[in-house]
Amino acid sequence: MKRIAAFVPNILGTSPGQRIRIETWAQHLQDFGWAVDFYPFEDHSLNEVFYTSGHTLKKASRLASCYMRQMRSILDKPSCDLILIYREASLIGPAILERLARRLQVPIIYDIDDPLFLPYHSPTNGWFSLLKFSRKTHTLFSISDHIVSINRIIGDYAAKYNPYVTVVPNFLDTQYFCPLEKPKQEPRIGWIGSLSTMPNLASIAQPISQLQRETGVPVRIIGVGQANLPGVNVEVKQWSAATEVADLQECTVGLVPLNDLNWNPWKFFLKTVQYMAVGLPVVARRMGSNCEIIEDGVNGFLVETEREWYDRLRLLTTDAELHLRMSKEARKTAVEKFSIQAQMPRVAEIFDQVMQRSNSAKLPMQHEV
Image (cartoon, rainbow, N blue to C red; front, side, top):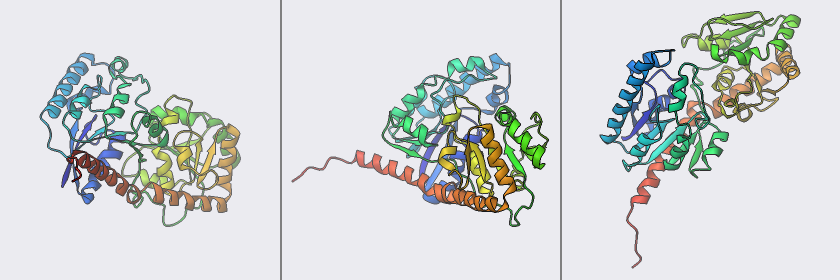
């Protein structure tokens, strides 16, 4: 069994992106002959204070402790055939630890699922932004043997620094995220998100409100403590891993509205895939990965204006035949392009190819006789 040393920023099971990518990959890579050993930068003592306001001295002390521990992990030369760095090996500082990992003389795969090269201001740790060194991402692009990007736009950006780039989108278990066996009868619009992403949904309150006044279509929100959507009657379902799929299955249309934020054009929106996997046609803003996932008018709609939001939602909530056709296409897209079965062989192939490339480079030069 070949071994991967995975340097990741967060403790396991706490970061959605990390959990969806390398933590999920690790569960299936064993079937392809790879075992994963995790080296998280964060520990529980840092995690318990880092994402809350205040505690500046505790945060600084625990960040320093985690940094030294991660450095020791690298200097101790973990037994591995390959290194994977997800986002960054350290939550703070320039690419010092990553450069140390480069000296271990094993191939490095860098997995990036967000535009980390853009400046970011933390809402709970404003001072932390000064320690992020967002441009160290460019160093990681350059020193890696291969880059795995979550979408095409980040992949194209990374290719300016490294020719070896493969796009691997987020994917999910489409046997678990699946439609109800019995088709739904009444339309229901659904949105899944957090309190921090609620402004995206609020941006389309007016067309939803108009549609609701005219048709009475219910609106379900999954994932926030309370919802403030002016003029719209909403049903709020608290997010839970145990009920997420069932709550989505009871909807008929999924929403992906987006505001004009610097990060959004670069983002991959997993909720789009989640909706499709359970058979929901998606109405989404024409932005980011939505343009790669949604085929306008086939498995969903791409929109911009309030009028377009209203028209497409009205179509999908009043035209049963259109809804059924697009529902089937949405499910087909999820299974064929964003399932474990479709993507895990590609992930394993990347690891195998990087190893083969590395081994070929180490072979002694052959001389003609």
